[in-house]
Image 1: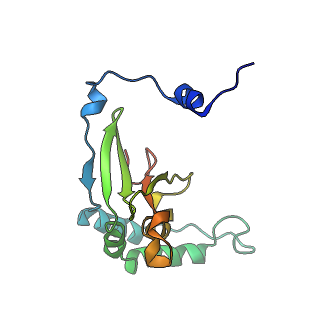
Image 2: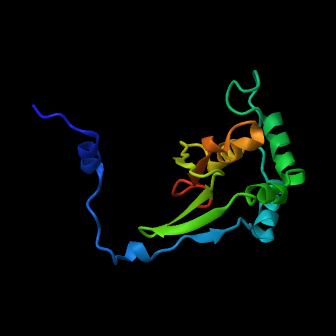
Length: 169
């Protein structure tokens, strides 16, 4: 019985090479910044102002669904207090890109790690979720020296938005 060596396993896991000049090889990622139009934010506030609230079912709050008082306070917060522009600015501190793959616009963050040879790391998430789940983790992974670590432990992080979610198609 033959035993597999590391190089044999690597060869087995490598995909067949594609022709050098394919459509996919000519697509370059484009820098991206989040810039939600003010009209969209105004529309959201107008919709929240026009909510038609249901009657409340008697009983314990949350027993038959969302507590109406909680839902009203949440909607009021989004309408009157939530600062989307501040959140947008925070997210835009990350290097973001879009690329077309198979007719789908894919959004992703790509933050290069410090040090001589940062390892690549792909951060994915499940539904419901978003790349934003990692906003506090990404700087720690890409620049560990800022948090008491060594630059030799750095990663280059790619965190995509799943297709159909966030800023992906």
